[in-house]
Length: 598
Image: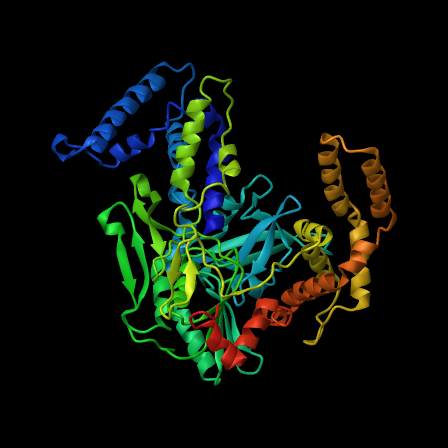
């Protein structure tokens, strides 16, 4: 969901950057016009109190400003662009989850609400300045005709993709089931483009990336989203695992950025007794304040559970993890979650467009607020700063204040460390997000390995390797020969083993220079620079085990699919191994869920 929001916001920002820079302040109320156009008619008798008088006054102010600009501005203005710039300006002063979607932009929102779409079953991204297939849905039209991850899309129905944005291409590839679409792709190792013609089908969104039995008797489910069909998929997967006589269950919510509130409530209800509070919301409007309880008896009331979370677990993921923690139903393992506890509601507006508005905040059963960032506080702080600097030389800092203040405000500083209690009396604390019962240390990745990932070199090597080698057997592992090929590949790409470390070194050196460091420090830095430049292969060798695992997983995914890739990755997954250990140790599991045994 977060990627969807960022994609829409960036698209509108790029399109309207010029208009926004000119009309930023005069158009901050332009949203009001669209509300009026949509039928929001104010009557004098409806206003009670100063707030609504201000609304009326500012609507009138906007009308006057808009009238003067459209009649007197030196150049002719696009009504659509100026309205969109104003809408983006208003929403930009709120939280990043309150978003306006024009008709063509709301497709991904529909996928979340329906759990399916019409298309061919591919995920795309930008690689090496080209629109590239990142993954292919198993059993989809794209997989059946032989499209592979790494394929670069050149044309869609004769439309050249070179100047297309990702959103534009997605709209052209998706469509009514039963209709045809033709792609021309460039594949590594092939001298000429390859053409594919496919018939679009209903593609069901995969809510569960993997479900299976690990460590002989522990069930594992990786839930990737909370859509309309997530609860039924979760029930089906859990019952399949129960038939295998599992002794415990791991629910993996890492990287799951959320989705539908109802899905989170229904999934939690599979494991907690009827009548238990799962979450409650509080908002300004009366209808935004609700309490959500388990409405049915649990399907799995007693099975020991562990829930894996990380900083990518947000929103609906935090509702599930928070409820299971507060009700002492599962051990939470991993790192603190994102802290996105804002409720969004979708409202139709003019001409088939919709607006998704933050209407409330989520709370766990014990009363903890999940939300970490206080956008209202941040906006007030930004407004005060603007007023204080109004007499100074003004410059446009659009977008900068958002980045600068990202880590300043916490949901409620007065309650950030307020003590709450779980159902059994275990201490838990507010402050945004869910803090695990069993905290896993962050995996510290070297700068060298991080650069390999950032530049997509594992992905690119796998694309080339698969194009040059036949399919191996299921016991595939990365050999010294493959590692040698990868090292040669890095040389071809002019990836300097020292470059990544040197970037960090130069940052340190620059900082020290500003502090006028001593001659002694200068000598040390010269020595360190020589050391970094003099051993070009040490970074590769020191990262060899992690490089080998990453290559293995990337190639297994290409040859055998996402399920086999995830299954193999669990053999190296420290958080998952810890969960298995806890679930197999009844005394430790009970202690973690007992008061005073955190």
